[in-house]
Length: 254
Image (tube, rainbow, N blue to C red; front, side):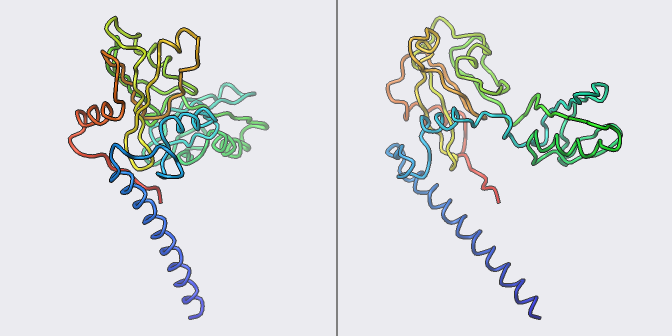
């Protein structure tokens, strides 16, 4: 009975903590949504990051694939330093596992490439003296960016580690003659799913006269307009409204 009471108290405490976290997140999101165009860009005031601040965070190491968490659908390359005959490409299945010769199914989703490499090393110790496995993410459906507007080939592109706005434009075949390259808009959603925009001067970035190029993050949308943008917030609102028939939602990780 005493053990059951302790278990009930522990479960109650965990549920209470989860409720507090969820309530705080929903409050921050609803407050940000209520502000509309007048929402603050200061992290301390709004509880969210402005595009400029998020870019700064991204450039501070968010694009480092060493900290990337593997997800279902990712295509991986697993290499063995001293035994290249065991090298293999593997796709993470929907159940989060991959299949490797001699060891069969292995859990991959939820691990970083370094953590998975350590698991592979352990699994192959019976077959190899020093496996020294390395894991590299070749492609990931969750790591994609979108380039739209006045570019040669608008579409969806894989986000490579450290990829910048200028490199994304190059992947899209460059801008057209009618493009306002000095007024490209980077659209990025904050933690509450609210789209925010910032102007990216691709002309200045390409000339190298000033550092206007920015590092991209998964699901970023880069739009090259036909004419100069006067009001970025209004442009983002109208652009998103034209794409989505309903407001976006967000999923809170539990």
